[in-house]
Length: 446
Image 1 (cartoon, rainbow, N blue to C red):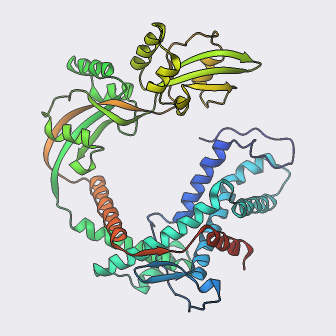
Image 2 (tube, helix red, strand yellow):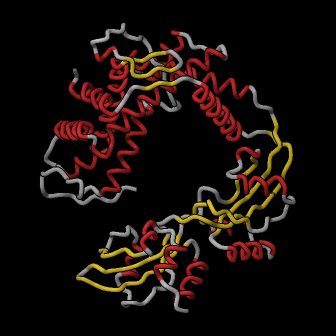
Image 3 (cartoon, one colour):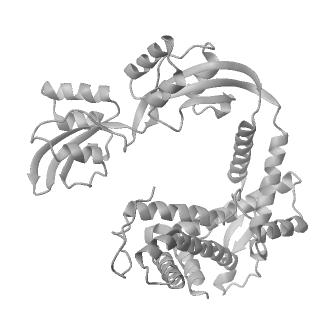
């Protein structure tokens, strides 16, 4: 979520420090995604059209992408890049306009729009936050994917007519510049419809409920509570360490179950029973526990060492080893999941905010020197390793729900596209210098 912005009394533009680094990066990512989609839901790729006559001495006519013999030259790449850049700048302006209207109450909307347009153009020119590289790479990928889509669709005897393209352009209020994008969108829809027609009405499925917990002790606790009459999904909400895979997943075929470990339990365990705790070393948890030791203070800074553990139980075990004479650096090397574990957990001199963790700061900057903290729970970090519990509610041949059907269609479409890419002969000649040249051509309008 965006942080609340304070009104400024100065008419100077907010600096990059004033707009936090995290905030800027997250918003830029959102803009890139929107720009790459070119405003249209469901467009994953598009097809190049109208190859230019090759002239060896004109850089615009040099082939930059070749997909199974279908060539796209620099001129077409630049024209397409122009669409993406235009949409990026438009979205950049729309994203920041409201904020800047508050910061500059004496400026008109037109003046702020011009200022933001200039700023976005400057960022592209200087490749700030790699935004220019991201957009040019996205265009190249989409040209490749678009050509693969067109070729694969032709092999399935799937085509779209000019009348269909024009009708869709009119529906979305787009001009002919977007005709290739619209053509690809329609092709993709038809290919996905084809894959949908190949699905059976029913499939073997399991109705499952799942939860990922941080420790075996927590898993055992949940099992005991459910056997005592507790509600699995309610307990999952309280104990879950991964909200993206939590609670009632509903009826799913094996291929849509989140991972192999869950799938094996869902399709092999006894219906109506909760699985035994299933350890998953690769599971991602939105929680971790710090052990912190401060060895010195200099003003508002501290010299600290820390290790990040995956569960409270593990943190307690490691702290007990420290109390028994264990070496902090050695144990950090062995157990810590923090990036600094390569140096034995030594963080060096840090100030409040350096660790990007409020939980860490609240303890570390109030800790007695040379005393290891109790485990510090931190839900702003990620750690790996946890225990799955799977409750198999039912299993059998079951009708496909609309959402399951769409996920299966997407999987088949993505697999099909991946197969086309793996079997195809794809050549790209877009090195960094050519990408930079293309962006410069777009920005200068030459």
